Image (cartoon, rainbow, N blue to C red; front, side, top):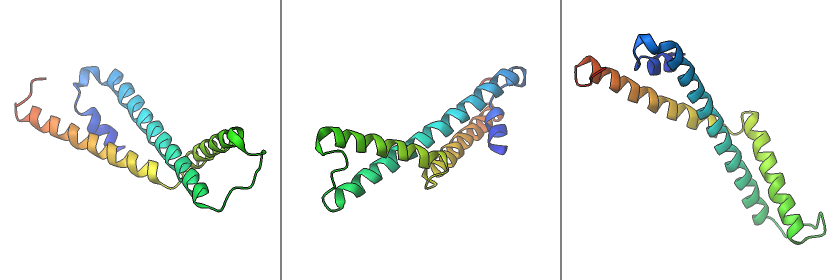
Length: 119
């Protein structure tokens, strides 16, 4: 949990308990957002793969209703794949964004320690 500790070091010790909950909530929200991103990516991937295939068979009789059903199905498959770890895209994006946040926190700490920031 080194990343969480680096992020928490930005805040004064007196407010750490509340800040810890906020940081944990934010990292949870980040994880959910990157999982949602992967779900959308997988759904788009499925949709484009289907368009590239031979003419579709008429599962539900064709028309707009079938197209809507297929879009919904792609979205649900995308969500399911992402929840199970997916292709690893969501996790990679999460790690990179968290690393960027830690780097930012370390820069803030360094500037504060150097007297460049108040607080």
